[in-house]
Image (tube, rainbow, N blue to C red; front, side, top):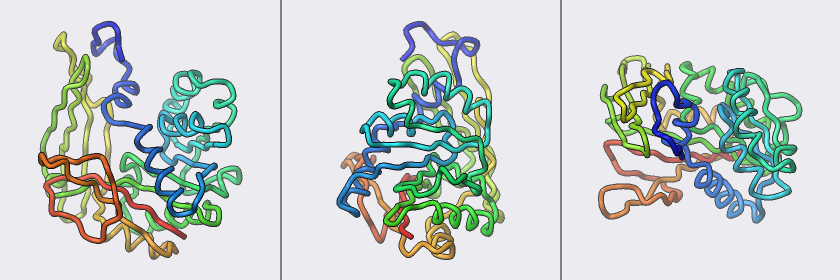
Length: 269
């Protein structure tokens, strides 16, 4: 975390995003736990699609000396940032076991095949707005998995996900603002921004912009089936007894009609 006061001029938007949004330790804990329970062993080969700063991939290769990782993303400047910041901070051995590729996730290279686990997190696959395009991506993932491999996605929904609104959350040294700016109930199209605000009054407007389709859980499970996955399981978060989540995700066939929720989907070929 920062030692000096942050401002819009001095802050790094990628690092702010990681601090406010991501928890790679919990994410990889979940992958390890679910895979080991399903297959009786730890996964070893992981691919992070839409990897961005490769935060989760870096956590993965740090876990065990046997772990290898592939990060795939189309955006060259973000991959460059990942190499200069997150990969450079890894021990040399861990760094040697992680490869970042600038590619379309629908067209993975030969070296990114045979994966024990493929991740599509931070709702990044929402960028695919047409059903057939999303299905093509899911097909490519299925073909990339080794026998026994698992596909991990996160998802968010609830009626507040369709609402035009702003959510502010104070972080150490700055405020994170999630801005659901537009939503079309006919097409499912959704435009969101992330802004950051600092103690000196300066703001980083539209640090990140998202043009998405808000997919529902039934739609996603149907498209996974169409793409050839034999089963998909929703992992729903438990309740902490105070109206919030407890951070523990378990398989569920039915959920609650919460105003907002985050869950995981795990698909098997």
